[in-house]
Image 1 (spheres, rainbow, N blue to C red):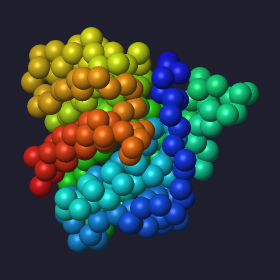
Image 2 (cartoon, rainbow, N blue to C red):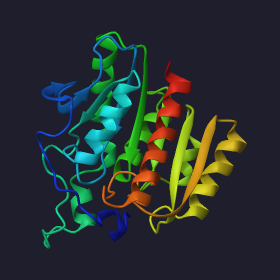
Image 3 (spheres, rainbow, N blue to C red):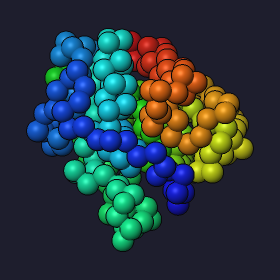
Image 4 (spheres, rainbow, N blue to C red):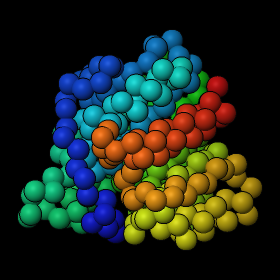
Length: 239
């Protein structure tokens, strides 16, 4: 189960944030989209438990789009992100009504909609909760590249079934996916001959790549490094 560490440092959500636009339906889901409609490679970004209105996530989407990708950030949480202030709904209770497996099924029409608009290759990146959705897509041959950032709920058995190139970016200080587990993931990928890039970021905690403070220069630097690694994975495998 996802640990309480998943829920630290909640962002101030902004439904109007970002340089892209919010559309009422992309593959059946409300979504934030950014990038050129003519792009032949697309990226689906999948949020953590705080959802698609997180300002840092939208900044990341804009930067991925500026690298030549059409980017979609679907609202897999249906306007119901986790709210730490709601004491009656702990993270295990919240996850029961927001199972990553459901989002995996909802992602398939999003990918189909991308292909209908002329996209030839699709990658997906997921943060924490979203990483579980991405690994399900990677197991099902739905995507051509996957990036997991400080994953939650992802198991060794999941990694054994990955079918596409994958990058896994872990945190040194992470109870949810500790470095030992991430290194185990790496061993499995090597044994299975799956193209992979695995990195443990020193001195950072779970959530560092998307829930960072812009006032913390070291945190921003680590988050930007993770973003560069993500874009590198997509440049190598989608273009």
